[in-house]
Image (cartoon, rainbow, N blue to C red; front, side, top):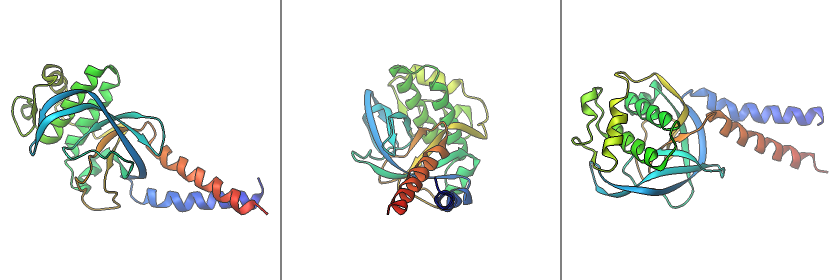
Length: 226
């Protein structure tokens, strides 16, 4: 590679990385396609109820499917949508979200990875919804028989998950990010029109950096042609 070409790649990389680093909580924007599948179960949200899918997976930027957990009672999109990925830490409170609830939900998601069966995924999804809709900082609030959210589907297994959670939320959970739609750069997160998700991203920044590298290579190729 010629030196001037290498410089172009470096400059492009810096220009793209700088906005990401400017706000430590926002990882960047991605194209997200969700895939929901069985098992299903009857669940009761604050605003609606019905028979819902309990196994969610997402494709980020056209990649292979990875584990995800729904954290809303909004509609899922049948098409690819733009989402913003946000790190799951105490900084979520800056976006108008109860950080402890999302940290505990991410902990449930992380613990699920030790037993990746359909039943375990369904129970973990039920537990995640219970935390998001009912957690008030006390263990007593995590009861699937009462509260704004409740469910009889996978209730015993989900309650066991909830009962095993620590008394205080961790300060950060690695390996997961919060995907929100519509995309944001600052301010409170809007909980519509489409579902938001906890998504498995072992190296969240890698998704963005990969996009940067592909873009940089494409620009370099075009500018180097005679």
